[in-house]
Length: 416
Image 1 (cartoon, rainbow, N blue to C red):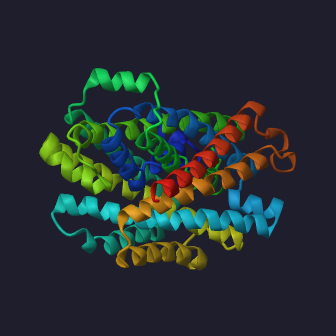
Image 2 (spheres, rainbow, N blue to C red):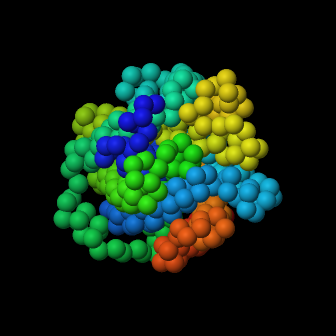
């Protein structure tokens, strides 16, 4: 990586980590969730997609600040400050969610490629996993990060698909700007699912890794870097919320309007073709592939980082494979395990539900630890989290935990 690239020059470079972290949140699991919710609730929950922006921005700002000040990642900080038992709890919660999400995302990404290439998705899962794992092993962090940033405009395919779906704009804007939530089970579970699949642990864990381990503070030191990271967090959160909104609208304007159910993102892409035209279906499939290609490297790398930090291995995408063998072996193993789950025939919908439930339960654990560390003067010195920011993060953590518990209760009642 050249000195110019490491010193933080260039506006996109300055805010790129937050953009990538936030965009990876719109992974195929989230695409499938938005498709299912849009088909069931039409535009009624479009305001929930907008609500994601401030919530995600707060989480990214907290994670970025902790990473920059400590020059460390969340897992390492937890082990150092609270000991191996607490760190093991974080390790299990993050890795469980990540592996389930990798499996679901691989299958959905392969389905998107299959739709575009007119081949069976089953032939694509293993090659896709191998290609992305190979990319992480062959490229240094700067190269991988640059590639992921260049892929971000591909998410706009979802926005184009939403426009081609010809939504009822007056009804859509009214539902977006005037929040309403009925007690209908579909609305309640839909809102819980949208928030639960968006505010996931790997996003803030990866943000601490990027800002604390892989990136340098850049020009001007830590304080200017934190200011730039705040801008990046806001931009990334708004971008992610806009894409989530687009996915929801595309499904609502087609599947929802014609009363056609959807179980996965692949169902939505297939249904868009006859309902909104081939271009809309193909654009949705392109967006699905882009979301997989952006999210899966983040998921694989964060899994390897968390495991490596817990056992104090040499780690990082900036390290050559020969000098961080256990780190890269863990990265590859996460991909192999996900492929095995997929080959075993576990349905995509089951993996989506499992990932959502696991994420809803695990996210608050790591987020509460992150906030506590951010307020710890032994860790942060005179750069502790401002009280207002910490309180906002605490409210989000408690709310996500409550939503996760409520999601499980509703699911258990509904299954009887």
